[in-house]
Amino acid sequence: MNNYTIYFQQAKTASHNTVQISTKTTNAVLLDVADALKADAASILSANAKDLAKMPKDDPKYDRLKLTEERISAIASDMENVAKLESPLGKIISESVLENGLKIKKTRVPLGVVGVIYEARPNVTADVFSLCFKTGNVAVLKGGTDADFSNQAIAKTIHRVLKEHDLNPALLTLLPPERSATEALLNAREFVDVIIPRGSQALINFVRENSKIPIIETGAGIVHTYFDKSGDLEKGKAIILNAKTRRVSVCNSLDCVLIHQDRVQDLPALLSPLADKEVLLFADDASFEALSGNYPKALLNRAKPEHFGTEFLSLKLAVKVVEDLDGALNHIAQFSSKHSEAIVSEDSDALAKFLNEVDAAAVYANASTAFTDGAQFGLGAEIGISTQKLHARGPMGLEELTSYKWIIEGDGQVRP
Image (cartoon, rainbow, N blue to C red):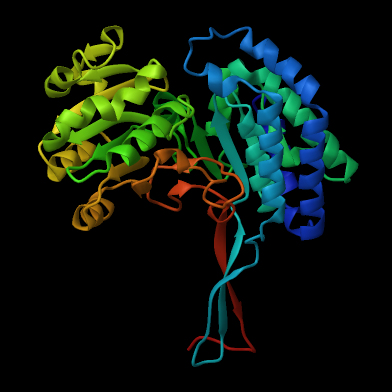
C-alpha cells in the first residue's frame, strides 16, 4: 500500500452512496458552495497570491493561475448554472420490449471515480467538483504545485459545505501536489474509473503513456482561422481579434491565421487591430511581404517551420497565405490538434466544405473560436474540451460524465 492508497479508498467508498443523494440535496449543496466561494473570496485570493508570487508574470500559465473577485464570481455563477440544469442520471436513452416479453432499458449512470490531473488552473477544482457531484461521480483531483495554495483554499470551502450537509468530504478528494501522487493516481486501477488530464501537451502525453486507467484527453488547442476568398473583412477583423486576444492563455485561443492568396492585399487591414494589442506575428514569406511597412516592424517576424503547429498561449500568432480552400484544409489537417477551427467566408459552398471536412471537436463558420467552452455551449460548466473521439468530444458537461447500463426486467423468462 502506497502513501496515497487511503485517498483512493476513501474516494471509492464515497462513490458507493452517491446515487442515494437526492437531486434536491445535490442542487442545494452546489448553490451553497457557490455562495461560500464568494463569501470566502478574500481568503481564496490570499492563497492565490502566494501561488502567483512563485510564478513569473510572463509565464503563459500566469493568467490561468490568476484569480480575481470577478473570476471567483464567474466560477460561482457556473456552479449555480450547473445546479439549475437537469441531471442526466437515470435518463432512459432507449427502451424496447422483446418478443419474449423482456423489457430492456438503457439508462445513464455515473462513471464512478473520476481522476483529473491539471496544472495552474484553480478554477478546475470548483468546476470539476460541480460537474462530478451533479452526475453522482466522485472527483479525485491532482493539481500542480503552481496552484496548490489556491486549490487547497477552494477545496476547503467545498469540504466545509459538504460537512454542513452531512455528506462525505471525500466526494472531492484533493491529492498532495507532489509528482509521486500523479504516478500513484495513474496506477490506482482498483479505485479510479477514468483519468482526465487538463493542461499542456506534455502533461497529456505523460498521462497517455503512463496511465493504467482509461483516459479522456482534453486540453491542447492548436487553433486556426481561415479567411476565405469571399470573407467579409469587418467580420474577419472582429473574429480574429477576439479569438486571439480575448484571453490568450486558454486552449481555444487562436494560433494561426490562414488567408486565401487572392485576399493577401487585405491582410494588413485584417490584422491591424492586433497591433494595438502588441501581438507578435510570425509570417510566411508571402504574408511577411504584404505586412512589411503595414504592421509594426518590432512585432513582425519571418515564420520558421516550428511556428506552425504551435500552441502559443500568449500574444503570438502565425500567419500563412494558402492557394485556396483546399490549401487551408490541408494545412489544418497537418497541424490541427482537433480542438477548434474556423472559417470566415460568404461562400455557402466553401462553408459547407469546411464544416464537413475539418476534423475537429468544434468547427466554426463566421464566428470566434473563443466560444468553445462548456458554459457558452449551455452546459453550465465543463470538465475540459475533449479532443478525442471515443466516449466524448468537445466541451464535456454533465452528459459526458455519465456512462450507461442495461436494465432488463422479466417475468420468469429463461433462454432456450
